Image (cartoon, rainbow, N blue to C red; front, side, top):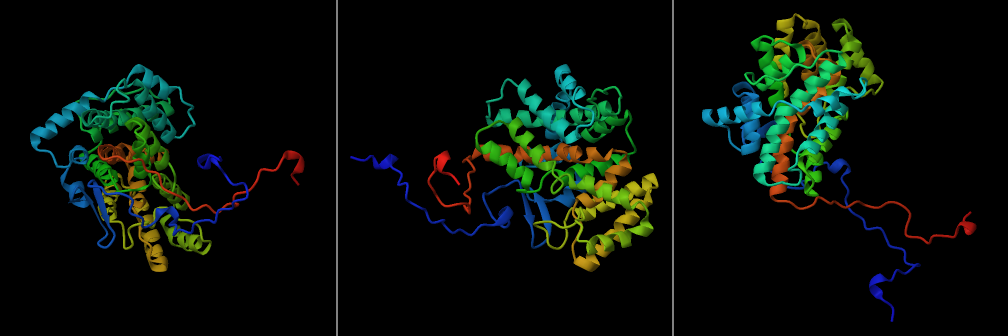
Length: 391
């Protein structure tokens, strides 16, 4: 008797099942989340119910990180305890420092931090412990150590000595000190802190979804974060802030900006920093970041970047009705703060690790492996011909 379970009819040709595919999962709702919401109708973004622009103006990045992890803004006592824990984790081992130091000098900083986070996972003996308490502790460690690794890479690529983290400074102040050996004015620190708040979380974006997919396999938080970094590196996602500044450097002269944009649109050239899959009438984070980019221009005297900004924005709105996204003001803001262009996206990582960790913990708490289907459009099932009979 034929075993029907293992029987395959060699002459059977399956008819492809027709499904309604959505390229890029556009408009697809694939899960629930309490972390954040992008409201397309009102062009608003909320973190745990709070409008992001309100958080940026009224809260330190540390408060927003706590909000991401715990679901509520901290009290003064809770914030003090959280800051004490985060600051105690800022140091990295000599081995981790050596890994960063010995990477090729020309490798992109996103590759450096991706490798660094992977190494952090190798050092953590609790790698398979995904309990809520342990994952929270790992999340705080990532928040604390990622800026140290990015700053170390920044120094090493310039041939400079490593500056150890301090425990008497905020995350933003400490990062400036580790990179430049000094802390800038309060206006610059505030602008940087605001950028971290605005970049902290953004619903089921590509890197967050990537992190959740990895988590759904019951892999560890370091693997999920490393995967998120890989996704964020792309110029259609986090890397766009770098491309914005390269574009502005190409233009250089505010008097040339309008014609540059007209020529770019006529040539159907992709202009980075404009448009968004979800927002249709403007990214809600842009007004706040633009305000602080202008403050950077006022502080540094580099008004030309905001003049170029205004010209490009004006032409794009008039000709295409396409609005800037967060990367458009963030690029020149980071440049005016003194950061090298290829470190803009690693700074994004500093912020987004909070959102990733929140989603990783949320996914782990109510997990089912993420395994979508695809519509097959290849050849129908067919026989394998012997090599001698193939034509």
